[in-house]
Image (cartoon, rainbow, N blue to C red; front, side, top):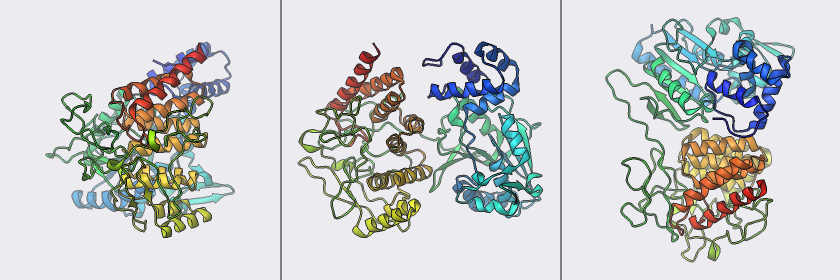
Length: 587
């Protein structure tokens, strides 16, 4: 069901797109409306009813419309960690298991303008597979496939950090780069609608594949389509084959019996070898609340909250900044090690480095910084006594990335001051020096944002946000690639994007956080603010109501996960005030 308000006829166009291509209803209806209007203009049509009839029967018009409603963002060797893992791990393992004469079969699903399949091909050629490989590339847009067939690119396709690997295969012609025939001849381009039950099949060549790249496309699909695509991707792989998805794509373990492979940069999937059983991919569990004194509601404790999952019983104790992700370490308090939920400092000068959302203004607001409609702080939102104690949420000192300073944990005061995450003076100076040079990657590394420990990475990003929000956003996006299943990183990314007034991107990040953790109350609260800024009052009110409902399910004095020490009762009142204000305004 497509919600929101659109001019007559446009809602039916989006419904057709969902039916034919499985695309979910777009979150920003204004942008979708503009995209449809651009497609109509190219079709020399200004009557939406006539356009709807034409696009229903004309595949070329439908392809052109799909190009408008999806983002074909790509460049050579995008997300270089995937290609590095293919080179260092997958190819040697495949060579050892299948022998030197094996014909490697790779597929780039949703290949867009071709940078991805050509990158795969160039890598395979460099690794000695030139005579033993076949690469297929498909897309739902015939316009994109024509660009891939032309293989004529600009500097925009070479902007990635590893794109120089492609330069030996490109011949410069003015401001364009033409791909060499040596690479092109290995790639078989073809049309395919992933949403349809027309694959896998031996006839199409999408069968018994060793490697599939299906990245940054599943985010566009509705849940039913994601399930069908995941099942077919699994069936398309040969035993032991690998599937690479994008960092923004939803987890697939609930839809098909993939074996998840955890790496230092994130998760990929493998079809188990014949005779072996895939370990079931366990989705993130709901984040558990804490009491006002910072201790968790443990299993069997009166007031413990049920997870809502059949047979799941009570929630495990989880610190407010922690996600119940694979490999989480137990903390002495009995929960998982979590990021400190309160204010962070960045050095000996004691300056705070908490992430202050852009709608927070003035003093007296909480660290979450939720403001009223119009930006003024909501009185009474700040915790009594200056903050809730948060000893259970203290950063437990996860191992930082190589070269990164070790974070240290401050004292958790029992009088109400919040736990502090600090950087040494040397680390702080190194971060500032890197920022002065404009080297965001080095600043992120020095701050510890590239830590293999997700809680440490999250804490470092929060500290970096007080020095340079743009660098913090860069660090957050990199950390999300390493830890794609940590809802807190997506939430923080949405917060930073909102601070830059990048509303559609903030909405995307917030939706990803809520996909990973549907019960994240502050995620729904943030979504309400994003939607309200986009003048989607009805949708914003729904988000605020959801946030209130989640907070009301907790004891009023419980600390809300990722809410910077805020209590459930206070945040529930905030959410209620927001949706009631919107209803009055709309009325």
